[in-house]
Image (cartoon, rainbow, N blue to C red; front, side, top):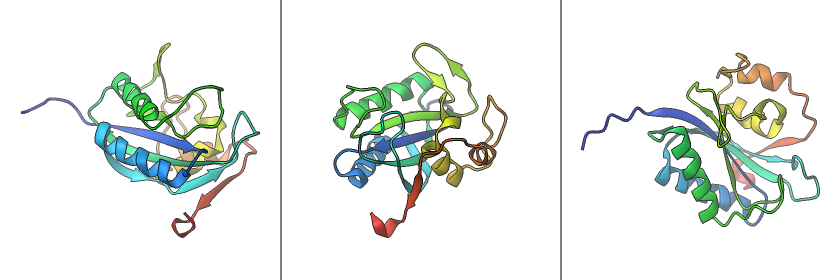
Length: 170
């Protein structure tokens, strides 16, 4: 059946600091491909200090570039459903979690509603986002600041550590 749905590009960040972190990221990748769209690129996995609540295990973070036919609200619904299916329980803001999937960008859209803000409002404040994003999309232009991701990453004032995990270390 022919559909006239335009394929859009979105950037997602996944984070996990509970259980088998590499397996959690792999399961999320499978779920994203099944429920959201084709993964076009993915960053290395980065181990990062927790942001917001420091008394918890370090995170593994990874950024994905995904082609999707979903609209932004459908994408938000799909990411939340994946988190729920994987067992995410929301008890404490910035607390420990089995999986977190955030929408960073959706094409070059700027959306600011009660339900959804795109681009993600704290991209520029978080090394755990900027490091993997700069790896796969250094020349991507932030639609609000009009700066490239590599320029934003270079100017980051976040002091939290971010370490690339080599594939053979996982």
